[in-house]
Amino acid sequence: MLQIKSVSKTYGEGAAKVVALNDVSLHLDKGDFIAVMGPSGSGKSTLLNIIGGLDHLSGGEVILEGKRIDNLDENALVSIRRGKIAYIFQQYHLIPSLSALENVLLPLTFCREEGAREKADDILRRVGLERRVEHKPSELSGGEQQRVAIARALISQPSLILADEPTGNMDQKTGKQILDLFDELNKDGHTIIIVTHDAEVAKRTKGTIFLQDGQIVNRTGGKGSIK
Ligand SMILES: Nc1ncnc2c1ncn2[C@@H]1O[C@H](COP(=O)(O)OP(=O)(O)OP(=O)(O)O)[C@@H](O)[C@H]1O
Ligand SMILES: [Mg+2]
Image (cartoon, rainbow, N blue to C red; front, side, top):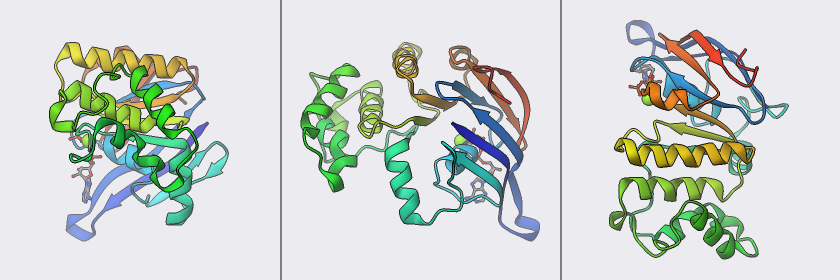
């Protein structure tokens, strides 16, 4: 479902040039669940940003469900991302003035669907927040805020979920609950890529790629598909 072909990314020029990704290739099947590990600065976030269309690549191709997505204009990219790719960040990026429910509904604001409210309620129940619907982010714990962010990601029924250190700000127990949720989502057929520094987190995925200096230096497991 996702093919990354010889992707490179450089920032800056001359003496300030940084090679963030150097000829990275990766192939994921539907239903895969992989971890991306590697030292700070190795290119993990850059890789996720490029897959998610948040950043332009310097070379190579990204193909999602048979369609090249690295050379699309902003409008096409927005519509692809809205339907297919969801992003979850370490810092939840919720809107502070909105309730949990309103945050979850946000992606649907511009294409208000029939039954959006019911859908949001269902998803909030799914992530265990049915009793926090009216709470603002400042009234929620870190784990709860991340669950709101996950619910917001799920409302557009993405086939691919990209998560950049989603448990980075949590204690182990809360992190485990979030990972249990990712497990369930994966069982429901969502393909997931999760960036993590934590080997325990990586153990719970189906495979891991290790980045170093912008290159994949090792790969393990995967649904037979980390190629
Ligand atoms: N906008 C930018 N401009 C210039 N250099 C950048 C930019 N973004 C990232 N870099 C550089 O690219 C390299 C890869 O960064 P990236 O954020 O992908 O690392 P990372 O593996 O996610 O690290 P961390 O574990 O600390 O989050 C780093 O050397 C970084 O300094
Ligand atoms: Mg990073």
